[in-house]
Length: 209
Image (cartoon, rainbow, N blue to C red; front, top):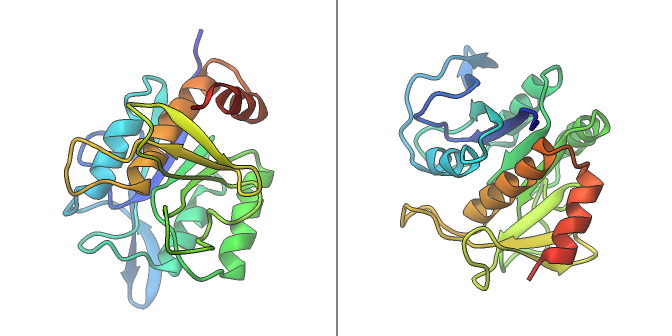
C-alpha cells in the first residue's frame, strides 16, 4: 500500500485545495505566516498541478511572492523556518537566488539533517552557482529538451544534476521551474512506494536517458 508523501511547494501559491495553505507576508516590519489572500500569478499553480498528479502527495502550499516573480531571501528563509516543525518529506523549489546567504545554507542543512529532501532549480545556462541548488545534498534539476513527458536525464556527477522536460500546459511557465516539478512528482511516487532517497536516485541514474 502506498503511503502519503508530504510535499512543500514554496512559490506563488496554488489556486486549488491543498493539505495546508499559508503565505509569508510583511506586517509592521515583521515577516509573519498568515493565510493566503489571493493567487495572482500562474507560476506556483502550474507547478502545484504537476506535483499533484502524484496521487499520494499532500501539499504544503507556501506563498512567498504574489504579484511579481521576485524571490526574497528573507521570505524564503521564513518559509523554511515554518517547515522546521512540520511533517514534510520533500521541498520543491522551482526557483533560486544568486547570493549564498549563510542563514539559508544553515537552515537547508538543518532540514536535510531532519530527513527532508530538497529539490531545487538550476538554470540551463548563465550561472555557475544558484542557491539552494548548489548546496551539498540538495538535488538540482534543470531543463533538458531531450526529455519527453516525465523522462529524467542524469547530467552531472559533481552537482547531482538531473534534467527533465521544461514544458507545461501554460506557455509562460516553462524552463527549469517546470523540470523541477516533474522530477519532484516522480521522486514522490517512488517515495510513496517505500523507496529511500538513495534508492530513488540510484534507480533514476540507472534508468535515465
